[in-house]
Image (cartoon, rainbow, N blue to C red; front, side, top):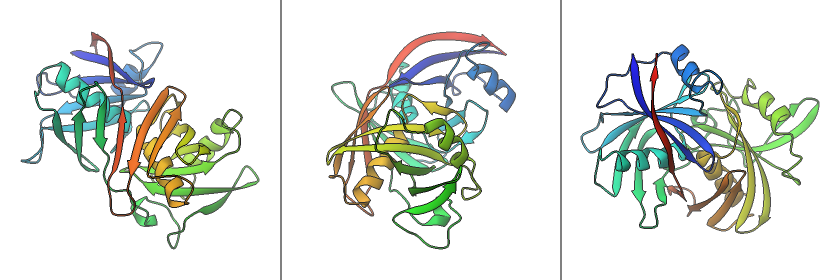
Length: 276
């Protein structure tokens, strides 16, 4: 099976994007791991499939697979690359694109400056909606990791996130604590772990240990979760610049019951074919 693909990146978070509308694509977890392998395959943090919509009002369906082959419901940087891909490939001429995902519908807007704004939906805080095995919702939760007491915020952006505030973003124990919390029994579907340094009321620095992918250069849903957690704690304004290792995203959220809006770039790197 020969598959045409496009390699894309959003702030260094890289993707293999595949048109599964105009070519027949059936991938299992082993094949996805091969494509994602940076030595023997193409190499990526996630693989994205562009499929036909399942809802009457949608333009496409958006599916996301981590580098380990697991399927997830949400990826913000991937959503921006998804929008850039369908425009660049002339799969649509719309500037506002509705896509079905397993976490609900997303609306992707192509801006005049080339950036993409994504309506990431309404964040959810109830533990059972994250999911998080805690008896009731709290502003912060506490867990012991590697013998230390760790405090974190938790919410869902269509995928689960835990946000830990740190004093020094450079020395934050992203690999050590991220790996432990990602697969902690508190999170039955695992969790993306964000380490956030609040710089001022309008900007933060963030590093993210993504479930199924380890630390990445950027995580769009993680940036949204970090901004929401900071706003909930009263530490941030409603519009926040989130600085990730790969670049910056603008996150806007007006509070409970409102959608989170993420704006940032998406870039096509190259096109190719791979034999599976």
